[in-house]
Structure formats: structure tokens, C-alpha cells
Length: 555
Image (cartoon, rainbow, N blue to C red):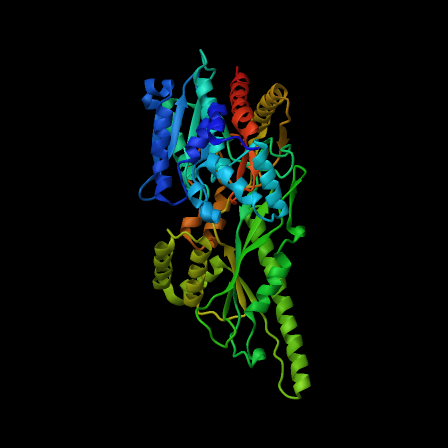
């Protein structure tokens, strides 16, 4: 049975104490609590003896927003210039899905008991049975953001404290906590942009980074206890479909945008043929995140426009690969839909004994091509109107809605009619990253990480494996990596909202990065819970050993 809150509190390690304390500070993305979190974290770090004596090595750098969200940086100095960076985010998703338990969502000890009580009193699904069993075992603790990812931050702080207590630290360890990972990774991207100046200020040579984000494991934990050597890439291709509306009683006088959309959906949704493989691991299948017609109010007319946006993860494809392949998929789906409509029309008119079916040809446009057409038709005034709309929407919280509105406005400026489909990218692209891009530096860094993993696995009598790709979207995509210029240009031209383009400056630092974090189950869900023995005991030790191994490799 789950221990009481008081007994649990007394049994927690330093990382456990920090995890619970930070979880009690709500920090939902885009809330004022997110903005306030950095100040609270500075206070916690400032109480460490090391930083109370060296306050100049504790920094808060503005990232974005009003009030300003800030990146928190804490540097423990040691021998030489070589520096390892530990990084994690402190924002969380909403607490809305806790329902009547929302007031307890950020109080792990009481929430865990409340969830046990609630689950014990109801008929349960298999997932709820598993949650109840986990929570009653005493090995799992619930709370919004505890798994994703304040327990990762806590492990990093505990490792930082231990490193600071060494008589002569063998290098420099920089801990960083960032906002906004759950939205647009603006915290990490701001940190990435500022890091060259930070490194110059403190005379640091950054040799690598450890992202501290959490992973999920529905089994024994063997898959969650891992060093991730890379992170999956994310694309969000959209299809904005223009048909030709008609009264519902005269279906064949128009062109069905819904039929075209249905064929695109059938071609794309969970199609495992579009999963790619790298280093022996398969990327997830694409899924549709939004499909809807674009109109307001009821009328007995088929919709002129239908919008679809997909989530397509990759282990190796480039933006050029993705855009070209998606355009080809959409073109094939449109041809199938138009042929089907023609065949149905021919059959209908044959039975009616009058009328004639018309065959239609469709067109596929990249968003960049649509924008060029709008410019040719409306000149600079049209582009100015599109840009004004872009700026007015850019701070909104629904990226798909923002992009949909901009594409609709651009199509109106271009004056084009269907059947056509505009394709491009809906939201921020998260690049695929892997140690393989760092060459020998990446190989050497992997050896250091796995040396630490072997030491800790033996010490704690567990297993810690190497995995190729972190499956969740994370700040790792922007941590230690410089985007390729040609890829950035293609993305910028075909991402309607400028706020969703990663406009990286010149002179960025590049270094190998892995992900080593806690594991648990159901993150972002009501039953979000972290596996305490690993997160609170093994993980801080693993991070500390990874730092020592990194610096030993340079001796």
C-alpha cells in the first residue's frame, strides 16, 4: 500500500525532495506561473553553498514573452575550459484533464493517494488497472510535470551539487533550465542563440550536452532506462484543399473537397510504408492531427475548402524529402478522388437518362508557389496584407488554426479556384538529430556515456541500455545543433507563419548531445507518474558519472 505523504517525504533522496518541491510550483506553458518559475529556481540554486559564495555563476537570461520567460543557468567551475551542459525544461502541459482532482494536480503526495482512492472505487479499464497497481506499489509517484520533466531537472541539480562538492572538479558543469518546450521550444532556441556569448564570457569549451527529458515505458522499465543517442525529427505537413462548392441536391455540379480529403487521409493515416529506418530503429507512422472544413455556420452547400494537418516523424528524411513525398502522395490521392467522382457522375447520369459527367484536372501547389501567385496578382499590397495577418496571429496558442487562416487568406489573394491542394508545413520543424552527425566526436561521447551507464547499472544492480532515437518531440532537436542553411530556406518558404520558422543566427556552437532522463508512464495524462527508484536514486548518479567520464576522456 502507498505510504503516507509524511512518511514518503521523510524517505525521499535529495533528487526526490527537489522533484516534489518543483512539481508543487505550477508552470503550465504560457501561464504566469511559467514566467515565475525561473525566479523560484534561482532561489533554490542560490541556497547551495557553492552559489551563495559565487552568485555571478548563477544567471537568468530572458527568452520570450510578457512577463518575460527566462532561461536559468548555473555553472560549477572546475579544472580547465572543458564544459558539459545539462539541460531540461520546466514548463508543463495543462492540468485540465485532472477534472475534480485539478486542485491536487501539482501536489504529488496527496494526488497519488487521491488517485488510488478514485481508482479503487470504480470499474477500471486495463490502463487504469495498471495505474492503480503502479501507484499502490510505492514505486511510482503522480503529479503534473513530475515525470515530464521536473524529476529530470531535479536529477540534474542533484548531480550538479555533488559535482560542486568535489575537492577539485575535473571540468566545468553547466546546468540549464528552459521554458516553453511544450509549445515552440523558444526557451531552448533562445539558450542556443545565447550560448556562444556565455561560453566566451566564462571561457568555456563546450564538449557535449545531456538532455534530461523523460521517456515512457509500459513494461518493466528496461526500455525507459536508456541513454538516447538521438531524437526523432518532426514534420507537420498540411493539405489545404479547394474544391468547388455546390448545392447538396446537385452534387455533380461541384467538386467535393471532402472526397479529396478522404483520399489523402486514406493514403496517409498510420501508413507504415511511410515509416523510415535508421540505426535499426523504425520511426512512427504518420497520423492526422486535424481535419475539418473551413467555413462558418450551416448551409446546404458542400464546403469550398477542407484543411488537414499531419504529424509525421522521421529518423532520416530531410525537409526536401518530406515535402516532395507529401506532394506526390497528395497528387495521387487527388487523382483517385477526381476519378471516383467522375465514375460516379457517369453512372448517375446514365441511370437518370440525361446529363453529362465532366472530367476535372487538379493542381498541387507548394505554399511558396501560392504566395508567388498572390504576389503576381495583387503585388506588394497583397503580400503586405498577408504579412499583417501573420503578425496579428503569431502569438496565438493554436498553431494549426494560425496556419490555416494564413493559407486561406493567401489563396483568396491569389484568386485561384479548385480543384487544387496547397501543401506546406503547419508548425515548427523539429530536426532529426543523432550522434552520427558529430562524427568521431559523437562516437567518443557515446563511449563516455555508455561507460557511465555500465558503472551505474552494476552499482545499482539494474540495466541501462543504449537506444538510437528518443521517440518524443523534445528540445534535443535544438540543443547543440546548427540547422543546415538550405533546409532552413525551404522550411521558411513553405511555412506560412513566420513564428514557426527557426531563424537561427550565424556562429552557433555545435557539440554532441544525448538524452538521459527519468522514465514513467502516461505523461501528459491524468495518470502521469514517475518511477521513483530510477528517477530519484539511479538517475542523479548516472548523470554525475557521465560528467566524470566526459572529462576523463579529455585527460
